Image (cartoon, rainbow, N blue to C red; front, side):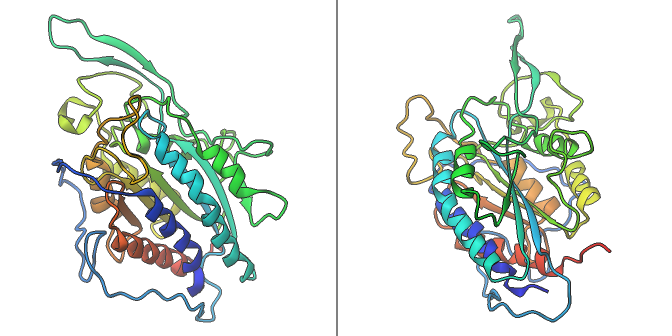
Length: 353
């Protein structure tokens, strides 16, 4: 097993540190306890819990052939109106990200990574459900629906590394600026499902996912998930903030997405990292002052995303997920949890015969 597989994942931790900041205003979240698993296993901890667990970064191996030697990494980036500054920070931090992952690869007999970018945006015909006697107001939102963004001049909608013939940081930084004209009704979990659908034969994302490769999703958003079943493309809603009154929104069960991931990858071959709001906040990073009159506004608490990560994916020591609060700068525990989760999945991965 590759004990030094922690090294590339330290990059993700470094990215977390640049992507999160202070927030205010507690925002309550509603939870459906049916079918959820206990997220407080013995010895477990989450991103708000202290730990004394040491991370093994000395590169020792136990001598067998198990462990991951390549990873397919999908960045799913919120492209709604409040995300312009956060996208700039992601693009600025990526050269350091890639330099560390490639330094790790240089020290291995084999380690390959693949990078793709898509957005949280999906297509739907929505009506604003107005109180009687005001008629409903129709609006159409158009999104990427999980389709990978193209990299300038590249034959495929992804980047493979290490590759000395490509300026991967520059290409990624350019593509990570996904714009801020995306729809306000956010459905990132549905976008993930649509992404996976399109990796099948004949789909726009065919070829991105490789055999015997660990899948990693990094979802960056300052809003919550309001995913409807993918067949539900025309609906009326009272507000874009679905968790204010979830009963009036046809939300897909969170257990559905957990089962989708398990069916596609197996329980031990994927990592889900969500950077979203644990509470509502006015700004999401120190550099994003909130003074922009066009894009200012409250970042939503990711109540449903937090529910998904805590109670379905899991963020304890034994689980596959990390939830990092985009609103707070003090997240050293979140970084340690992220490294631990990555190392567990990579070290315990058994390639298919």
